[in-house]
Image 1 (spheres, rainbow, N blue to C red):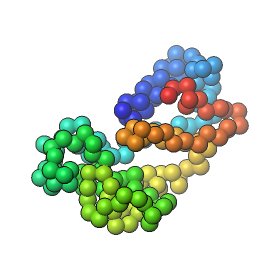
Image 2: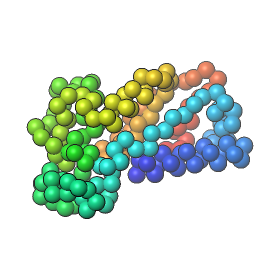
Image 3: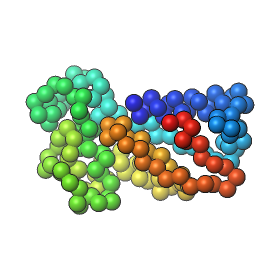
Length: 163
């Protein structure tokens, strides 16, 4: 769902830009001449594929089923295809994460150290390389929204209008 929502937002901004129209009273061409919006529609493509389509296309199918408590139903899968939950890969509070398991699993394995997987390190490096004033993170599996809205001089974030 997260990727669909993000792609919908991109489509809405693009259409408003092309049609020189507004969203919630904000002129999108004017807004986008003052700010940049970066989207990362998906950080865990192998985990999403596994969740949606099952283990059939993976070379480690038997290992994945074992990590999934013997089940071939991957609808509750929250890790990448190596059994590591990427949301538990960031350094903030890493040592004190609750419900951690000691080996790869469908949901709770945090890995041996923060940023041990390239996906999380790449996202971290990307955020450090920009001076973001605002961020929004959707987490459909956890059913949460994380964000920090800061007014930018001469431009007001309008993310709320597309949620």
